Length: 424
Image 1 (cartoon, rainbow, N blue to C red):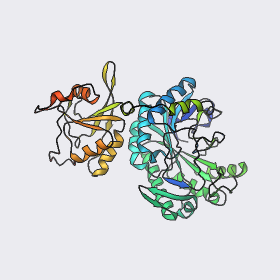
Image 2: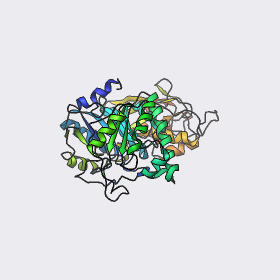
Image 3: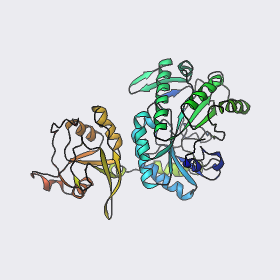
Image 4: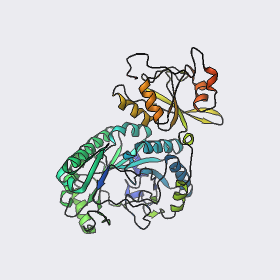
C-alpha cells in the first residue's frame, strides 16, 4: 500500500479510519464527455446511493458556502471531493475554481477528484499546484474491443467517437493521465465496474495493467443496473463473485473492499452517511445567487519582485494572486503561468489558471491574449507602477480615468512590442 501519510485521513483509501473521518462530495460538474451503457444520471433520485446522482448542482462559490455549513455540523470531515454528477474535466473551469477556493478557505482539508480520465491530462499540473492529493479514475477495460461494449460514445470537443475508436481514445488518455499523476506524487485509485458477461472475465487484465502503472488502490465495483440504460437487464454481480474477483485482482494491486458507491452529493462518514440530512442545506445553497465579481474574488499580477507591475504577459513565468479585505490587500499565492509556445492553447490554459480572478495586471499584452481573457470575463489591465495602485483599480476602488494621458499610464492599452515572447 502507498505510504503517503495523507492516506491516514482519507476514508476511501484507508478502511481502518472509515468510521472516524468523513468526506463531502461537491456536485459542481454536471456535464460529461462520455456515455457509459450503465449510466443514467437522474438528478434528485433520493432513494439511490450510486455515482452520478445528486439533489442539486452548485456553482464554485455555492460549493464553498455549502462546505462551510457542512464542516460546522460535521467536524469529522477531512476530505472534500468532486465526483460529478458528470465529469470534473468536462467542467474544468468550475472544477479548478472550486478546488482553489477550498484550498484557500480550508487549507487542512484533503482535496480529491473522481474522473473518467479523458480530459484530465491538461490539468494535472494545476491539480498538483492546488494541492489535490487523491484522484480516482474509472478504468473498465484495457482492451478497446471490450471498452467498445461499455461506452456508447466519447466526445472530444465537438467530435463524437464511437466503437473501438472511442474506447481506444479513452484508454490512451487514461494511461497517460495515470503516468502523469504518479510523476507528480498524486495518490491514485482506479474504479472498475464489474459487468457480468461484458468485462467480468477481463478484470484481472485490468488489475495487472494498473499494477504495472503503479496505481495505489483498485476498487472493483459491482454493476448497479439502472433503468433506461442498455445494461438495465444485466444482473448485479453477487457478493461472492465480487469477493472472488477482488481476491485474484489483489495479486496485482491492493484492493478496496469498503466502497459504498457514493452519490455525487455524498456527505458524512462511510459508516454514517448524512447525505439525506444535508439535502435541504444543499438545495438551499444551490438557490443562492452571487454576482460575477463575488465569484471572482482575486486579482492576478505579473511582477518580477512583488513590488511593481513590470512584466509583459508573454514573459511572466508566474502570477501573484491577491485578495482584498477590510485591511487592504493580501497575497494569497503564486501560480505558474503556462509555458511559452502553443499559440491560442496557451491563452486558453491561462484562462483556466486565472478563472477565479476578475482582473490581471501586466506591463503589456498582445491583442490575442487580451481578447481571450476579456471573452472569459477576466479584465486585462496594462499598468506601469506599484502593485498597490494597480490593485485599487483591479478591485474597482481606483479611478482609472485620472491616469489617462500620462506617458506611463496605469491604464494604457498597448499591443505587442515584438519581443519574440509569443505574446500575440
